[in-house]
Amino acid sequence: MAVPKFDDLFQPLIDALHSLGGSASISEIDEKVSEILKLNESEINEIHKGNTSKLSYRLAWSRSYLKDYGAVENSARGIWRLTKLGQDTKLIDKSEVKRIARKNAKVRVNIESVTDDGITPNEINTTWQDELVGRLLKVSPESFEKLCQRVLREAGFIQVEVTGKSGDGGIDGKGIYKMNGLLSFYIIFQCKRYQNPVSSKEIRDFRGAMQGRADKGLFISTSTFTRDAKQEATRDGAPSIDLIDGNSLAEKMKELDLGVKVKHEENVSIDELFFEEYK
Image 1 (cartoon, rainbow, N blue to C red):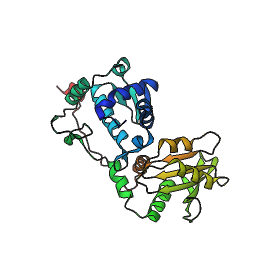
Image 2 (tube, rainbow, N blue to C red):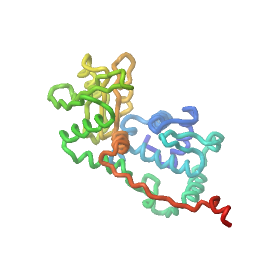
Image 3 (cartoon, helix red, strand yellow):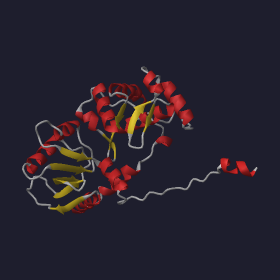
Image 4 (cartoon, rainbow, N blue to C red):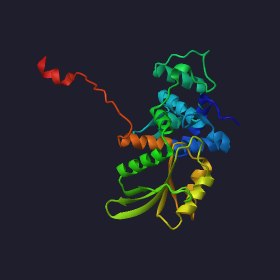
């Protein structure tokens, strides 16, 4: 089946959160919804724009509407959970969700001008993550390797080297991560400027190259990872490989203040309690 429009995803999204115990990360929600809808790999990985799949893009709008409706909420750590309303709601009326959500969000909708996503043009925007990933795609492969080296160093890795050897199974570098100043883990990493999703074959090839050479593997990509690739990365009995997709890389660069500038606007209000004694 084709990926449903954003409002047709309200029900699967609520069902997914109920199934996951009432709360979940975005990746867990995406995975569970794809299972509920029985989407195949090509449908799951179909790119909408930039680094975002069509499924992830439309689910992002579904979460936004359900949040304005009052059925879900999210924490600063990016975990989404059902509210009391969401917990009590088993069957979603999508027309009612859109009516209340648009009222609460003060969005005015022109019903006659909608995209095939079911989203009005005035609601569409490009996220800063998309813009940053787009910028990363413009740098050379060598520069991207050096940038990943910088990110890892800033994140606490030591002795980070970019090897860039051809015929080395895709290994681009190595480093050491010391946990709490006590335990050291030797890491081998691969960093690829991809637009298409990373497949399970590439994960298997990378694992084969790292065998006996490191404690863990790290695969960094500007794109996403297929469902099979994620499963392969954590397959039982095989050395685990941590995956960093484009959005995760963007978030980490923001956290480390690398290539991203964040403007904090001053919000000033009058403290009425202060003036109680000056009436």
